[in-house]
Amino acid sequence: MAKKIKFELDLDGLSQLMKSDKMRAAVTTAAHAVARHAGDGVEIETGDIWQGRWVAGAQVIAKSEKAIADNLVDNTLIKAAEATGLTMKK
Image 1 (cartoon, one colour):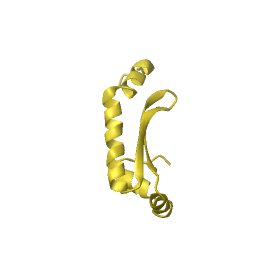
Image 2 (cartoon, one colour; image 1 turned 120 degrees about the vertical axis):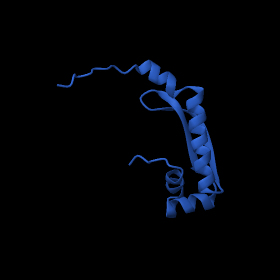
Image 3 (cartoon, rainbow, N blue to C red; image 1 turned 90 degrees about the vertical axis):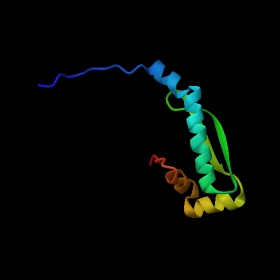
């Protein structure tokens, strides 16, 4: 008979991990990869975001009229994110 294992998640430790310099670097690198795949007219914004706790975050935003129009018609940013190996929440 298998033993049941009980564990407790260290939320403070997880919060520290999600705000660490390594996590910020990983998130920023992923955002740059998405922006490269999306093409011209996109910008990256980085900083902390609220996900129940503050964590490292980044946004890739269509800024030019062409990028905005392309994204509306073709979902350019979603396709660029998926092309880099990211999965999108639906």
